[in-house]
Image (cartoon, rainbow, N blue to C red; front, side):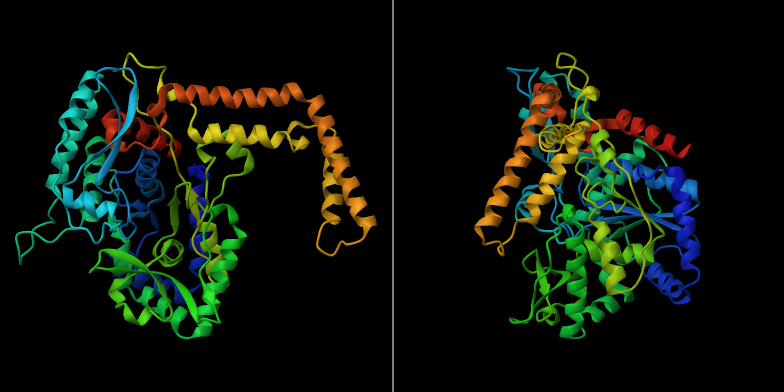
Amino acid sequence: MLPAPPQWRTLLSAHLAARSTLAQDVAEAIRFRRQLGLADGQPSVMSGHQATLWHMGIAAKWLALACAGRALNATTAWLVVDHDPADFCSLHLPVASSAQPDVAQRSTINIGDAAAAASQRAGVPPCLAPAFSAAPLPDEVREALTASGNTQITAQLDALAATLTDHQRGPASAQSNALPNTAAQQIAATAAAVISQSVPASAPQRMLFSSTLCRTDLFAATVARMSESQQAAIECISAYNQAAAAVPHARIAPLICDVAKARFELPLWQLDAATGLRKRVFLHTLGKAGPSALAPRALLQTGLLRWMACDLFIHGLGGGATAPSAAEQANQSEYADAGGYDQIAERWFAAWLGVKICPSVVVTATAYLHPAPSAHSPAAALPTEQAVRAAFARAHQARHQPALLGSPLAGPVALARAELAGLAGPAIRSETRRLARRGAYRTLHDALEQYRRENEPDLSALQQHAAAMARELAKVGPLGDRTYSFVLHGAAGLQQLHHAVAAQFHV
């Protein structure tokens, strides 16, 4: 967790103190929270994810949200990002064949009926897909799980089918026997039920759905601000693109801003119920979409929520605005792929709206399914895919960056690189400058070659270490995957994760 939970109270208190001086923000926040069905008399902590039966890293966020609510005396809410296409009706699992019960293969099963599977393949967001009938576990998968001794997973999948059926229809109302239900609502209710069976009192106090944010006054006012004129759209898009460019490792694509062709892409989606798809929204197409058909893109979504709906937001690695340091990424493999896209939202909202959104923290976890008794070594000892990639990257970087090994040649190499860079560019035409550049290039590579000769044992050791990690991970194949659904980990896995999370909060 970044930072450690004892520091969360400090972040929360500082935000609340700053917010209390802004009367207009307080009033707007109260209205926004009430429209979302959130309590407005206490601090609010929020987290969320797409409408899937997510892996244990996301389950850690769910459990941390409940712990934070108790530790900080705050209300809790979970956002279901139901307008993102997602694998809402399928699960991956390791299945061994009857011929080779010790060798697992990654298999995918549909947990929903044929219509749901077709919607998922077509990229229909789960907010536009209806709730579905649970599909039975295929006989060949059941037989393979039994043959490899994984009857516990079979039992968990059977229980999942029953829970999906329980939540296929919404709660009864006075007007009808049951309310219509979307696939997103069904999956969200199922996830909450499965976790609550293993870890009671872990559910958030409120479940929100991103497709409903369009019903709020704040969303309408924000859309009006970015679309009131061509200049307003340019200001919004320019601030967005500049913020995205400042955080390149998050890999957020810029919005189109083509003045010559009058094409201005807004940070919105149009949810087309007729086709079941979502479309990009431009300034000139905004009027063709009714307000209820609009949904915010990722940065606008968390930006609005962190601005007015909550006082602390729990991100995972992809969104975490609290980016891990280089040392943390090197030493903690679960942070190796940290994206930190919400750092962009912070910069964008500050530049475009002149506001500071609430602080965020990062929570993740790495957990593996235990292999069958006759399989390989305990999965808990496995390196992760991220750790293997990070090890190879470090081995490669060390050959070009003497500072990584503390070599005294780091200084000369850096000076040679700087000299070479200073001689680059299209303006360099003279033969004298070309010769100077050639000389600087030779100096740089001579220094690197000397460094590599002197440090060959250490460089080889880094490469061999990365290769050994890769071989260890390859031995177990699919069992080294950390992204299997929390459902497959069962009550014992969820309870173990809960104990580890709660220990960080001293609760």
